[in-house]
Length: 232
Image (tube, rainbow, N blue to C red; front, side, top):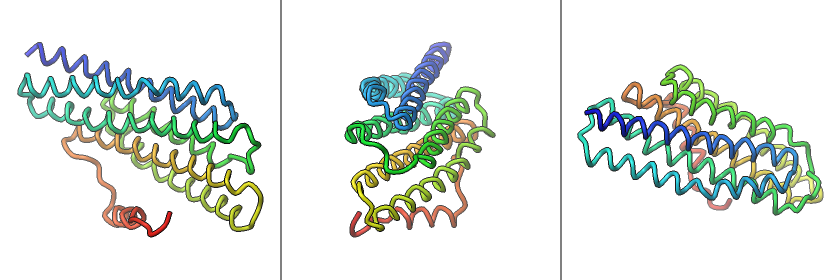
């Protein structure tokens, strides 16, 4: 029995290391966007290139645990949650890199608007990622639930960014291409918030044996919002 405990401890350490790496990536990505620092954005892309390999290593360890042992319910929940969490954590790194690639493609052109709401989104999603990992480390159910709820703030900020940038495009102001780029950056931050929320939900599952659910009305509203559109 000591063997599975040892491997579970290794899983925990690897997941913490993975989470810390992605925390660093999103923090630097947010800083690069706000400061329009192309060198920092490139550093984010370079760091992110190693994320996928770390994900594969953790996935292999989880599968090894499942194949070599017959985990009891509690341990099985931890392993299953880890398998789900690493997918979301990897996506956070990937989308942080995408944000930086968009910013680099702007080639240092001055921003067409103040990034007030995008800056708030960057701070909010960084907070969500950090606290979702902290909730896992501390097995903190209350903190995990607060991360899930905090995603609503990110969604509200995205709606504000979208309204401002769409108005810029509709009014015929110059540099509409950049407005689209900034909208994509905001959308990536919104998706990062979704992934951090998912991590927190899997933390809840690992502790309680079931995921935290949103009210049915809210779930239906989000499903309708995410229905495929005839044109993006």
